[in-house]
Length: 497
Ligand code: NAD
Image (cartoon, rainbow, N blue to C red; front, side, top):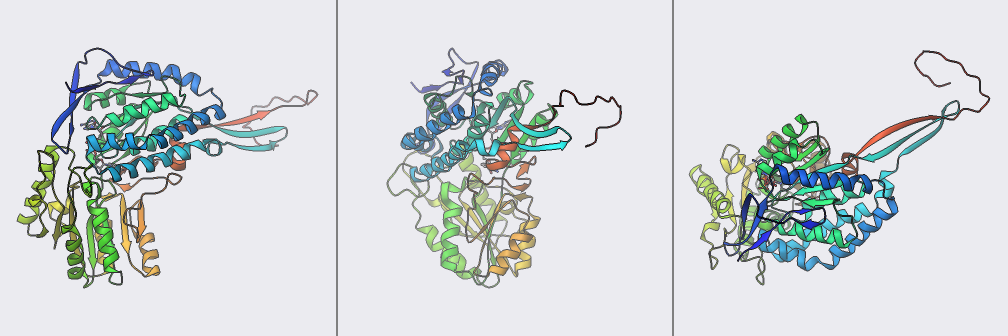
């Protein structure tokens, strides 16, 4: 008997036979380990009803009580790191070490949300006119939803719900149907932390569930993270339904290596950022741009390190790279290796030769040299352990290449020249920039988001952008006249006196 993963609505797991369900796999063995209920419009409606009732009381709960719940959640996530990381590895496949890193980065957003009182503060001006004061308030939106991808089942939802809830909203999470268990563990931690039932809900499912969320008039805002075509769809359908939407999409992240860089340091960075989590990170480096005459040496240094990587089940000792998420995705990435070869790139390391016992969805690291911008391994987001090296004659050529790309999530430059790095930071059209840092994922108190087709909408996630996204401001002008003040009625537009 496989496990049945249910929705979490109003503080309890749903019951009964679902109309639709999906299969969940352990990617390291290729075996199905669970079934997950898929929500239809009626299930989403139940979740919205519970969240609406809960939101009414939650927004009136004092800031100090809300923050106590956040601090309790912080402690519980901290104490349950092992269980959360194990759940990630069992369904996503990434190494346990990497899963622990993900939990840590999610926890940092919970910690940011513990400080919500200071970022929710409004503004006040006394005497803007005679006996008139003005102030602004930040109020929650009500019920908000998050729709998240498979690749960070703890961290990406945590970019959203701790801040949304701390700000006084109720939250409905639709996690990836491929690794849904992590969200159920988090729902139970919220409950143990003292969050009232109905403030945090989880509905599982696919497009039908997402459409029900996007169309539901009781949901005020949607945060989405996933691939670019779905991000665009969610943004268009959600905003057409009158919602506030932020939709983060896919990526093609470049790492530019200037001729003065330390090639050993750059090669280490390319390997860790290219193959960590089997390349299934939206901030993974997928293109190394070798500037000037360093390419031969750099490719050799990357290849040497790549050949030593250990591809194995995520919970095996010494594993550095786990499997891909599904058999179809593994086959798709393998297909890109064949395409790269036939389009004329030089295959330096062929991950298809890696063999791991069992029927897991494994592919070893792949390294291509002499990749050009027209090849599909360059134009497409491969989202696997495939690193392409493009050769550029100069800094200007490298910059033009990055800026011509339709994605603008992350980019890195490796150099010892501070002026070149400063110029690059200014000129590059990408939302997150690393200087000698290959994966420049901002800390929780900054905001995370890309440019161009990596983001639809204008607010990034977590940090202050999230506080703005999950609240709306109200400006109040108040007059308390002296009891004996002269009364004068006039119909002119109000101006300060
Ligand atoms: P995905 O777009 O397939 O799925 C994301 C979410 O959308 C899931 O919850 C899924 O159930 C739902 N969905 C899938 N197909 C849908 C459809 N046709 N209509 C409506 N909803 C649908 O993405 P994924 O494969 O789970 O995740 C990988 C992608 O996410 C990559 O492209 C990666 O770059 C991106 N990503 C981006 C960021 C970022 O911050 N920009 C972060 C993590 C992942």
